[in-house]
Image 1 (tube, rainbow, N blue to C red):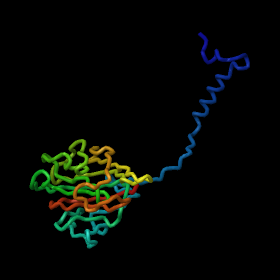
Image 2: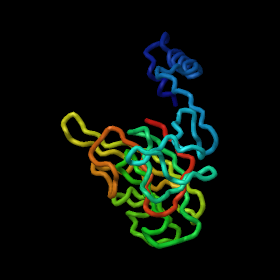
Image 3: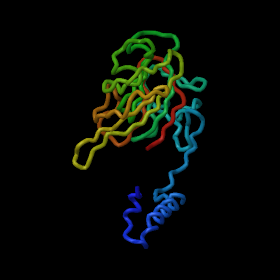
Image 4: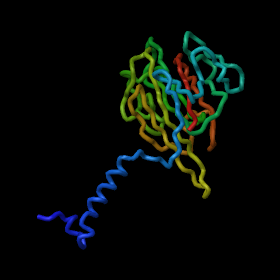
Length: 245
Protein backbone atom coordinates (compact mmCIF):
# COMPACT_ATOMS: atom_id res chain seq x y z
CA UNK A 1 0.00 0.00 0.00
CA UNK A 2 1.38 3.42 -0.99
CA UNK A 3 2.05 6.01 1.67
CA UNK A 4 -0.81 8.54 1.88
CA UNK A 5 1.80 11.30 2.00
CA UNK A 6 3.57 10.16 -1.14
CA UNK A 7 0.25 9.66 -2.90
CA UNK A 8 -0.32 13.42 -2.69
CA UNK A 9 2.48 14.22 -5.15
CA UNK A 10 1.33 15.77 -8.39
CA UNK A 11 4.19 14.65 -10.59
CA UNK A 12 7.82 13.51 -10.67
CA UNK A 13 9.21 16.89 -9.62
CA UNK A 14 7.13 16.78 -6.41
CA UNK A 15 8.14 13.21 -5.58
CA UNK A 16 10.75 14.16 -2.95
CA UNK A 17 8.91 17.16 -1.45
CA UNK A 18 7.39 15.25 1.56
CA UNK A 19 10.88 14.04 2.46
CA UNK A 20 12.25 17.57 2.26
CA UNK A 21 9.46 18.92 4.48
CA UNK A 22 10.04 16.22 7.07
CA UNK A 23 13.77 16.94 6.98
CA UNK A 24 13.14 20.64 7.54
CA UNK A 25 10.93 19.91 10.55
CA UNK A 26 13.61 17.68 12.07
CA UNK A 27 16.18 20.45 11.56
CA UNK A 28 13.97 23.07 13.22
CA UNK A 29 13.30 20.76 16.15
CA UNK A 30 17.04 20.42 16.74
CA UNK A 31 17.61 24.17 17.02
CA UNK A 32 17.65 25.81 20.47
CA UNK A 33 14.40 27.50 21.43
CA UNK A 34 14.46 31.27 21.40
CA UNK A 35 12.01 32.64 23.97
CA UNK A 36 10.17 35.86 23.29
CA UNK A 37 9.46 36.14 27.03
CA UNK A 38 11.65 38.03 29.46
CA UNK A 39 13.97 35.91 31.54
CA UNK A 40 12.46 35.37 35.05
CA UNK A 41 14.49 37.01 37.81
CA UNK A 42 16.69 34.74 39.89
CA UNK A 43 15.75 34.23 43.54
CA UNK A 44 17.96 32.36 45.97
CA UNK A 45 15.51 30.22 47.99
CA UNK A 46 17.78 30.31 51.02
CA UNK A 47 17.71 27.55 53.65
CA UNK A 48 14.77 25.19 54.02
CA UNK A 49 11.92 27.34 55.31
CA UNK A 50 13.49 30.50 53.89
CA UNK A 51 13.78 33.37 53.83
CA UNK A 52 14.44 33.65 50.08
CA UNK A 53 16.66 36.44 48.85
CA UNK A 54 13.79 38.75 47.82
CA UNK A 55 11.81 38.38 51.07
CA UNK A 56 11.27 41.01 53.74
CA UNK A 57 12.13 39.47 57.11
CA UNK A 58 9.57 40.55 59.69
CA UNK A 59 10.96 38.48 62.54
CA UNK A 60 14.34 36.73 62.63
CA UNK A 61 14.17 35.58 66.24
CA UNK A 62 16.37 38.40 67.53
CA UNK A 63 14.55 41.71 67.15
CA UNK A 64 11.01 43.10 67.30
CA UNK A 65 12.03 46.21 65.33
CA UNK A 66 9.55 45.45 62.51
CA UNK A 67 6.58 45.47 64.92
CA UNK A 68 4.52 47.95 66.92
CA UNK A 69 1.56 48.05 69.27
CA UNK A 70 -1.80 49.42 68.09
CA UNK A 71 -0.98 52.84 69.52
CA UNK A 72 2.40 52.87 67.81
CA UNK A 73 4.35 52.08 70.97
CA UNK A 74 7.19 49.57 71.10
CA UNK A 75 6.21 45.88 71.28
CA UNK A 76 5.57 44.42 74.71
CA UNK A 77 5.63 40.72 73.80
CA UNK A 78 8.28 38.51 75.34
CA UNK A 79 11.41 38.02 73.24
CA UNK A 80 12.90 34.58 73.89
CA UNK A 81 15.71 32.55 72.36
CA UNK A 82 14.71 32.72 68.71
CA UNK A 83 11.01 33.38 69.30
CA UNK A 84 8.51 35.96 70.47
CA UNK A 85 5.63 35.07 72.78
CA UNK A 86 2.19 36.63 73.09
CA UNK A 87 1.86 38.75 76.23
CA UNK A 88 -1.27 40.34 77.74
CA UNK A 89 -2.07 43.81 76.49
CA UNK A 90 -2.93 43.36 72.83
CA UNK A 91 -1.62 42.12 69.53
CA UNK A 92 1.21 43.37 67.33
CA UNK A 93 1.09 45.07 63.93
CA UNK A 94 3.86 45.00 61.37
CA UNK A 95 5.20 48.50 60.76
CA UNK A 96 5.08 47.93 57.01
CA UNK A 97 1.90 47.38 55.02
CA UNK A 98 1.26 44.81 52.32
CA UNK A 99 -1.36 43.74 49.81
CA UNK A 100 -0.94 40.63 47.68
CA UNK A 101 1.78 38.50 49.25
CA UNK A 102 3.41 35.21 50.08
CA UNK A 103 3.74 34.91 53.85
CA UNK A 104 5.62 32.40 55.99
CA UNK A 105 4.84 32.13 59.71
CA UNK A 106 6.05 29.54 62.21
CA UNK A 107 4.15 29.19 65.47
CA UNK A 108 3.75 26.93 68.49
CA UNK A 109 0.97 26.61 71.04
CA UNK A 110 1.89 26.03 74.72
CA UNK A 111 3.27 22.58 75.52
CA UNK A 112 1.28 22.58 78.74
CA UNK A 113 -2.31 22.12 77.59
CA UNK A 114 -4.82 24.45 79.21
CA UNK A 115 -8.45 24.99 78.25
CA UNK A 116 -10.40 23.44 75.42
CA UNK A 117 -11.97 24.33 72.08
CA UNK A 118 -11.36 28.03 71.29
CA UNK A 119 -9.71 28.59 74.68
CA UNK A 120 -6.72 26.39 73.91
CA UNK A 121 -3.65 27.90 72.27
CA UNK A 122 -5.61 30.57 70.43
CA UNK A 123 -4.10 33.36 68.34
CA UNK A 124 -4.37 34.47 64.73
CA UNK A 125 -2.49 35.80 61.72
CA UNK A 126 -4.38 38.64 60.03
CA UNK A 127 -3.58 39.60 56.44
CA UNK A 128 -3.86 43.39 56.02
CA UNK A 129 -5.10 43.48 59.62
CA UNK A 130 -8.45 42.24 58.29
CA UNK A 131 -8.50 38.58 57.25
CA UNK A 132 -7.60 36.00 59.90
CA UNK A 133 -5.92 32.67 59.40
CA UNK A 134 -6.65 30.99 62.71
CA UNK A 135 -3.90 29.82 65.03
CA UNK A 136 -5.16 27.22 67.51
CA UNK A 137 -4.13 24.06 69.30
CA UNK A 138 -6.25 21.74 67.15
CA UNK A 139 -4.46 18.56 68.20
CA UNK A 140 -7.24 16.27 69.50
CA UNK A 141 -9.24 19.37 70.41
CA UNK A 142 -12.88 19.47 69.33
CA UNK A 143 -13.84 22.91 68.07
CA UNK A 144 -16.10 24.35 65.33
CA UNK A 145 -14.45 23.73 61.92
CA UNK A 146 -14.65 27.42 60.97
CA UNK A 147 -12.46 28.16 64.00
CA UNK A 148 -9.96 25.33 63.63
CA UNK A 149 -6.25 25.92 63.00
CA UNK A 150 -5.79 27.16 59.45
CA UNK A 151 -9.39 28.29 58.98
CA UNK A 152 -10.12 31.56 57.25
CA UNK A 153 -11.92 32.39 60.46
CA UNK A 154 -15.69 32.14 60.17
CA UNK A 155 -15.50 31.83 56.38
CA UNK A 156 -13.73 28.65 55.27
CA UNK A 157 -12.81 25.54 57.26
CA UNK A 158 -9.50 23.82 56.46
CA UNK A 159 -9.65 20.87 54.05
CA UNK A 160 -7.88 18.67 56.62
CA UNK A 161 -6.53 18.96 60.16
CA UNK A 162 -2.73 18.96 59.72
CA UNK A 163 -1.92 20.00 63.29
CA UNK A 164 1.10 18.88 65.27
CA UNK A 165 0.95 18.18 69.04
CA UNK A 166 1.07 21.09 71.52
CA UNK A 167 4.49 22.65 71.97
CA UNK A 168 5.80 21.60 68.54
CA UNK A 169 6.63 24.18 65.92
CA UNK A 170 4.16 24.45 63.05
CA UNK A 171 4.21 26.32 59.75
CA UNK A 172 1.81 28.37 57.67
CA UNK A 173 2.73 29.12 54.06
CA UNK A 174 0.14 31.58 52.80
CA UNK A 175 -0.55 32.95 49.32
CA UNK A 176 -2.90 35.91 49.57
CA UNK A 177 -4.59 38.11 46.98
CA UNK A 178 -6.50 41.05 48.39
CA UNK A 179 -10.09 41.93 47.47
CA UNK A 180 -10.14 44.99 45.21
CA UNK A 181 -12.64 47.47 43.88
CA UNK A 182 -13.08 47.39 40.10
CA UNK A 183 -13.67 50.31 37.76
CA UNK A 184 -17.43 49.67 37.79
CA UNK A 185 -17.52 49.97 41.57
CA UNK A 186 -18.00 46.26 42.23
CA UNK A 187 -15.63 44.38 44.54
CA UNK A 188 -13.64 41.49 43.17
CA UNK A 189 -13.06 38.89 45.92
CA UNK A 190 -9.51 38.09 46.89
CA UNK A 191 -8.14 34.59 47.32
CA UNK A 192 -6.32 32.59 49.98
CA UNK A 193 -4.19 29.48 49.71
CA UNK A 194 -2.66 27.99 52.87
CA UNK A 195 -0.30 25.08 53.49
CA UNK A 196 -0.24 23.97 57.12
CA UNK A 197 2.91 21.99 57.91
CA UNK A 198 3.32 21.50 54.17
CA UNK A 199 -0.23 20.19 53.68
CA UNK A 200 -2.73 22.10 51.51
CA UNK A 201 -5.64 23.18 53.72
CA UNK A 202 -7.04 26.24 51.87
CA UNK A 203 -7.14 26.01 48.09
CA UNK A 204 -7.63 29.39 46.38
CA UNK A 205 -10.56 30.19 48.68
CA UNK A 206 -12.44 33.44 47.91
CA UNK A 207 -11.74 36.23 50.40
CA UNK A 208 -14.77 38.52 50.81
CA UNK A 209 -14.67 42.28 51.19
CA UNK A 210 -15.91 42.09 54.79
CA UNK A 211 -13.12 41.48 57.33
CA UNK A 212 -13.29 38.37 59.51
CA UNK A 213 -14.57 38.47 63.09
CA UNK A 214 -12.52 40.53 65.58
CA UNK A 215 -10.35 42.09 62.87
CA UNK A 216 -8.65 45.21 64.24
CA UNK A 217 -9.03 47.04 60.91
CA UNK A 218 -12.15 47.53 58.82
CA UNK A 219 -13.01 48.69 55.31
CA UNK A 220 -11.64 47.79 51.90
CA UNK A 221 -8.00 48.79 51.40
CA UNK A 222 -5.16 48.17 48.96
CA UNK A 223 -2.64 47.44 51.69
CA UNK A 224 -2.52 46.83 55.41
CA UNK A 225 -0.25 45.48 58.16
CA UNK A 226 0.21 41.90 59.25
CA UNK A 227 -1.41 41.54 62.67
CA UNK A 228 -0.63 38.85 65.25
CA UNK A 229 -3.48 38.43 67.72
CA UNK A 230 -3.39 38.33 71.49
CA UNK A 231 -6.20 35.95 72.53
CA UNK A 232 -4.97 35.40 76.07
CA UNK A 233 -2.76 32.37 75.35
CA UNK A 234 1.09 32.42 75.33
CA UNK A 235 1.48 31.32 71.70
CA UNK A 236 4.98 31.65 70.24
CA UNK A 237 6.10 32.86 66.80
CA UNK A 238 9.36 32.67 64.86
CA UNK A 239 10.74 32.89 61.29
CA UNK A 240 8.23 35.35 59.79
CA UNK A 241 8.97 36.62 56.29
CA UNK A 242 6.94 38.00 53.42
CA UNK A 243 7.26 38.42 49.66
CA UNK A 244 5.04 41.13 48.13
CA UNK A 245 3.46 39.81 44.93
